[in-house]
Image (cartoon, rainbow over all chains, first blue to last red; front, side, top):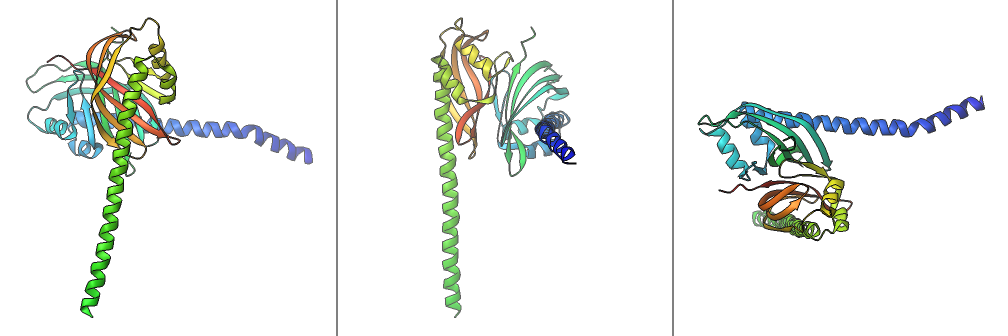
Amino acid sequence: MKRIYLGILMGLVVLAPVAKAQSKNSASAGVEEEFKKLDHKWLDSERTGDLDYCEKFFADSYVLVLANGTVYTKAEWLGILRGPDRPTLEVLDPTNIQVHVFGNVAILTDHTTIKGHDSKGARLDGEFNVFRVVIKQNGMWKATGVVMNEDKTKK
Amino acid sequence: MKRTYGLVVLFVLVIASGAVALGQSSKKVAEEDVAKTAAILDHVWLDAAHNRDTETMAWLFADNFVEVHPGGAIVDKKEQIAQIEDPQRANLELHPDDIQVRYASPDVAVLTDVTTIRGLSGGVNYNGKQRVIRVFVKQNGRWRAAGAGIVPIAAQ
């Protein structure tokens, strides 16, 4: 009987670190999935013009840097999306989203495909590698920064 | 009697508003301190890159560091440091201007700057001003660089 107890005890000791590692991995995979969903929701809301969501999701500190280095604040960018010069975005799709979480801030990198045109009809199509920063404020994740780069890595 | 109550209420209000003001002012001071620290670390980061001081970079960069370069290359801590110590790399002109702290909290700082870079590094030929977002995070009581996104400012 003692041998059986000892065997069970040894089994638990051996398996405990594995169980812990699995639980840690699945937790981080879950967090990663949440950020990937957030990235999709973010771009979907800009594509479909869900500006109420953008208004809430963008932190007051939000800053967007386009691929030509032009900078827009939250008020400036939402002003464009609400205004007559709003671009028409047919495709705004992030892939290969990589998540880097540092407590109350997370950096997402992704490859974003854009298809669309500006208010005058000029095409805005492009492939971009994007640096995105989200911060946790009052328990909510909010976008605070974006830097877009034309993806020339495959050319 | 009414006067006594009035004086007590006034006294409580004065004390309470003083406490609120003190709280707000200490929060503002803390944010200013974070902003100053982040601005200094911006210089430390670029000085280390300029001087190929990979030890300082290893000390400054968080383990999960990520940087997106002009042209879209995405590099981690190890790759970024390898690029800096690459003997083929030119001695870069490298300095930040117009540092603006966009967000500061007790453990996070996000800033933008205009970094002038001239020279060849990581296969990219830098020739002028770059718009940059830099992210700093406090880990175990120490500020570290979490990442950066860099894009060239197109000629107007």
